[in-house]
Image (cartoon, rainbow, N blue to C red):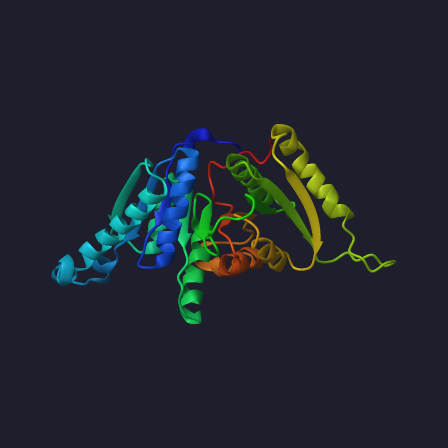
Length: 296
């Protein structure tokens, strides 16, 4: 995945719906847009015309009907974003489309696509989760799912999951960039599930440490003032990263697996994080374009 500065001025795109989670996403993305000096684009999928509902019906009702309601959702999100980051350039759009194809299309001209989570019952969360997972697999830019506790942390800690893959290397580049912009700290984590030492029963971390040392050496040279910590843990990668997300402002991972209609195969680690992390999660998939270089 070569470096590409073509997307350096592309907006952060936020999907807006009726949930309070989308307002959280708009606020979070506004702060990020301010930090990066990028525009913010808020979009809403207006699917009623595609479901063959007569225009007269979705234009009727209090306050101008469903179309007016969609425009009000965007206006409320824009106001929340402006309060969070005054001065950020904000545009809004009501698009006649379903949410998933709309966001996939928007991702072609986005630095990131940002979405929130819905606070609902288990069945609703599962449906929303499957849509988000499919979006991650189909998006042409990294996807950030804003979830968890968004209150200020003790430090600006960015956690990156490292697995030795090319997508994992891209995740490191994104994580380093975020930690450096925030003036924070990067924690690179590799999780060992197998390879226990036959003599002591302790996990064999030597290979993991070699992996981390290798992939981080160049980034340390490029960002000598950025604190970069490496850690090898034993257990399940997803559970370990969920635990670490309690202290993080962002968790970044690469998504191994397939997207599209097979989105539910998008890797158990990324799925678990998208459902259970205590902080926003950024996921980069194989379709992402214009990523920072995987090497410093």
